[in-house]
Amino acid sequence: MNRAFVKDPDDAGRPEEVPERPMSPHPNYVTPAGLRQLEALAVGLSARLDRLREAGKLADPHELALVQRDLRWVEGRLQRAIRVDPADQVPERVGFGMTVDVQDEAGRVETYRIVGEDEADAALGKISWVSPLAEALLHAEPGDGVVWRRPAGRKRLEVLTIRPGPAE
Image (tube, rainbow, N blue to C red; front, side):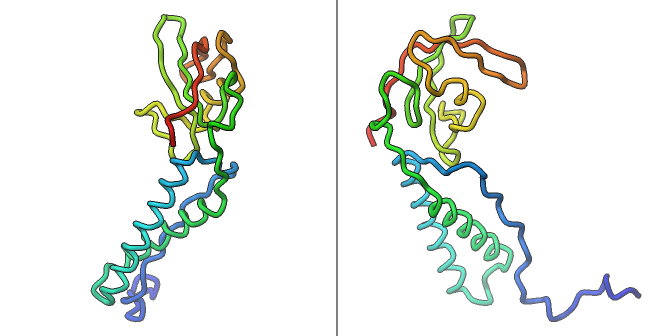
């Protein structure tokens, strides 16, 4: 039998290799809330890692490898974090951390907040600053028309209002 298909008994206690989480090539701009979110995630992962280490041989090696990997990723994101306060932005133009009300050609009004990649949540109207929608909106002023290039086709939007994000 080919040795490639036989389990090596020395591998029994070794944690399974897990692929690293990809790191974005973009600068890691974060709002103050986004920075707190990353810090809280790091604290939670560190506590989980401590519990797994305390469990010793009873700990699931795969879970241990996943937590270690995720903690490396979060620590890397924190090291690269560039805190941007929305209050420091030009209030008349769409900028990072700002909340924007837009109206589409059908008259539907939507509200978006431009945030860091790690805090983006489309369901909450939080869009990443590197998304096509944010790229279309950045630097626009109230009354400006912008074109959002989407996979489903282009969509024209009018910027209605701009305001700083929630108080942080």
